[in-house]
Length: 408
Image (cartoon, rainbow, N blue to C red; front, side, top):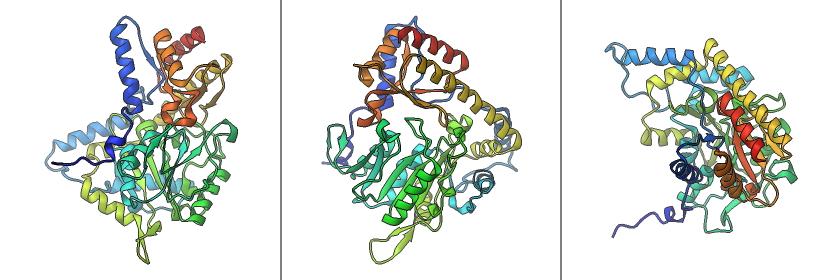
């Protein structure tokens, strides 16, 4: 008889956002007359900007022209997009990268989930707590997590990010091989200063670790002391892989485009006496398992870096920042503690006394027809909090504020 991969059945029964969707669907079915406003799953609501739409239409027309038609593209991404990324996201900030170190894909979530394949099954993984579930679940699927008890996996090293340490993780007592960091952070909306992030780079160099750095919300950074890329820090190119996405930057959640940076001088042990470069390994993996992001999508992504595109995208982000500021002010006025919302589109909110995260979720859903994300769904250290997002329309955000004020 065929046998299942034994790691998959150990996964927790419901993915966090699937469970939220199930609860919301049940509420809508029972209350069809009520308008539900979501401050939960972090999907964007503003449409693609004009520069992106124009590039997309032009590329679609090219695909109907035999002269300009494109079939299979390079698995690493077209040169025109990789070069635009290097120029605007890195060289503009004083970071020296080559286009061969950029790998374009259909999403940071996919890349983050897949990159762990390059590491030994015996590798020790460290994650912040609370944490984006994909970091943990992909390693559970790979068989690295061990057994599950009391909300945690036995072989995973957890780095609590809580009020007591200002949501800045402390260095682990157990040395990990892989360290997942996400800044600006999902779900807490907090960010690491340049000094704090340099400390993690130094730790990784000292201990021989690899940092898997999720920088999906970089475009929301406002404070000058917050680095936009981990490669702005000394020595980061020796120890860090960076994941970027256009989903929240330019509204590509439905179009799908992201990229991963794998520096050529980032090497790990070959399990013998030498070292092996991750750049070549990731390239080999992608060539085997991936056929590349569609041409029309990459042309649309290229337009994000045009002069008009950058201006238009920035205006959209400012609108989301305004939503975050309004939500933050309103929640503070209710007497609840909040974090984030300045350098990220997420606001981390303490729930009223005596309630747990799912209890507050249910209360807001059933009493106010509002959807939030229970903090405990991101890990043990998330209990007592919920995540609110600023991705709604201005009108829905104001309506959500009115409902929150009436409820709290």
